[in-house]
Amino acid sequence: MTDFSGTYYSDSRGDTLELARRFAADIEPGDVIAMYGDLGAGKTVFVSGAAKALGFDGFVTSPTFAIVNEYQGGKYPIAHFDMYRITDENDLFSTGFYDYLDMGFVMFIEWSENIEYAIEDSFIKITFSGSGDERRTITIEDGRFSR
Image (cartoon, rainbow, N blue to C red):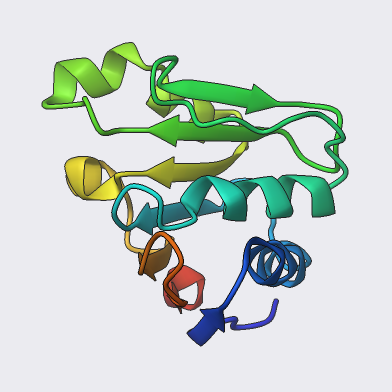
């Protein structure tokens, strides 16, 4: 396992996809990737690049309305969450979040700040800054090394 912690810069969708591809090479079943950043910062693009690198050949979409999208058929199953509208433990429970943890899915979680209480310390935190045509700053803090 490689510590991928650091600050990276993206000047395009392609840069973000490439960073996600390299990042995904070290993902393992059960990894929790907590993503932080404003709308349009590149979170879903990052998930798309990681899912493709893990062998998922379908289309990755934002789970804004579905709350969770599953991507099967690659190296590992992926659960892609959007926790924007999750306000309490009951809401979180109803998403099936804890079931996905128990089933060993790789979990990408957008708007993780809404459920920090439910994420163990050994998660990977990715913070996205910038939107629109701005350069993105993508900071990765790999908490798996605290396991």
